[in-house]
Image (cartoon, rainbow, N blue to C red; front, side, top):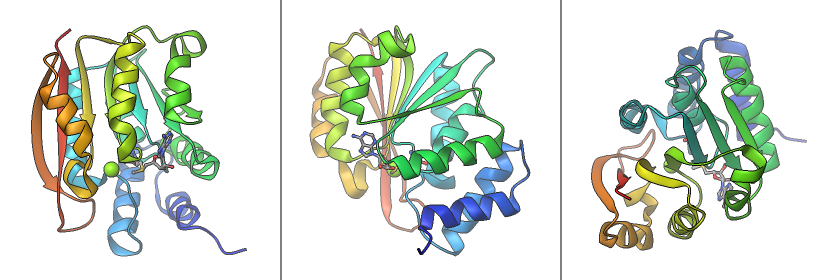
Length: 214
Ligand code: SAM
Ligand code: MG
């Protein structure tokens, strides 16, 4: 059977990256996806915004919706302090398995837990199954129609504390208008927009940061 694009990304990482070196894994994925085949990683340009927001949040518990092959999970986890962890949710079993291998090559398996399933099913289980009380940082990068309902679910389940930071990708392309309307009109969120470009393209895109004010 023909290999998938994601398998080819893994092959490139296995062949070219330095084991245990997250930066070399990120560089390898960025090189492959900018030169050979486009893929939906947050990428190096918006990745810098992601890095800054993770550093600002300095999370103990970080959460990600949409693991794909693990690129942003590696970006986030490489910045985590000792004893901090990232839980990342992915419903595609092939992507989850490839991400596991790439994260292992990056040497970050101990910091990252990949949870297989739909975000809407996993969120209500985070407290009992994954010992999550509050989340300090959330990266939203799954299918865009889930941004708004999953944010509401996070609030309803009581995972947000004063100062929890949400960062949403792809606010312009492909866009998440219902989420933007909800978050900007919600009195408990303080929002900032970061204009940028779609990963590996010249197409306009942006990220939105929303700080929960309690
Ligand atoms: N965050 C990744 C990165 O930057 O490296 C890219 C994530 S990709 C844009 C979106 C991923 O979300 C896909 O792998 C897709 O299978 C997954 N996904 C979409 N909707 C989901 C949902 N409701 N629950 C779990 N995973 C979902
Ligand atoms: Mg994205």
